[in-house]
Length: 465
Image (cartoon, rainbow, N blue to C red; front, side, top):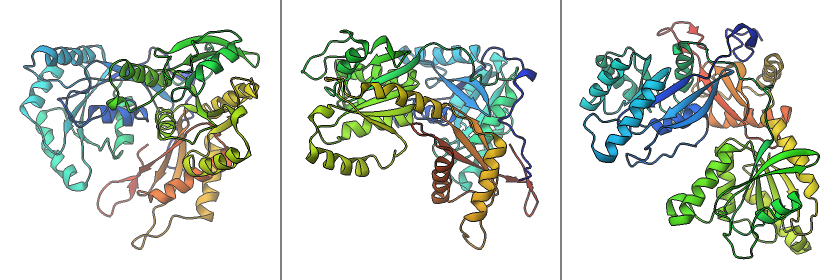
């Protein structure tokens, strides 16, 4: 397929200086959707989002990637000019983020328009002398997008209209971020030397996480007690498994949603979420002798939304009889149908049964997590797919898929360049076929769509990529 788009994922790494990773600060007044935008940029729900203003208080950095480039995005609390007490400390953190950033995203609520606080923030940003991109967020439809034109009066140039919640305009915004950096963002170096692979052992209380750690380490590394909830802080251990050293983090069992937990359990939940974020692959332990629970589902969701490789270990297999095995197969089909790609192993931490299968499963999941499909091979496959099963016709026409590129790895992320928005069902179809062709067993993947913009009414499409 001849494409109008550059092969942005196949960048010549030697042609660009691999300097320090650039920093992008996301600032704005409270409750304009900064954390939602950060989650959209990093490709997973990691920054805490609530309708209540003031959830974010500190400067929180996250690793981000786009088109084979890496940078750091910093979420900040709401900035206000005359803040006092805690709000003043939050505003100071935001100002420090601006001073240390290479590019600033100034987020404004497109539905509200500019306010006195926004205008005061613009004065603060001008003093910083940093490149600023004006982001008009919450533009969920065309009517709101038209209203965003009024934001030109802020004097920061053209408002970049996005919906962080739905992903509208996010690809164009990421292109602008890379272009605004004083120095090119360094390419992602998948071959960089690294230490032991990081594995988070997670699961609800008393599923045997600490027992498994002790079995793998062949010594008592973690306190084991039949009383659920013995572990509170994550415990890091270097463990030799399958002839390789791994860094295992034994975490507290998650009983409740973080928002419903209190005291020690609340902080244990936060630390567990942090351990998942810091890991490369998560080994989620489920008690094979008991039904798959809501807590199990919630933990699996945390791992998937964090974009981590995943191995599900059904522990306590020594307690599973034929009847339970039959029920478990039905539960897996019903409860885990949204993650059929997860690698599953059946083990017993108590007896040592099949624990040697864990290392090969982790390696396979990590290989999928870091896999990259060559652009030519990807588009040859895509051409055949859309010819065999074209997009259904809606309203007398059907959007065409023009070209695809893999925008990043860890986990694999693909961008489809199209002539228009795809039906969600067809987008899921492409993702399913992508897995059937290229595997990715043990890793989440994402497929996003970037429609081609038109130059004007009735004009030929112009490629943006």
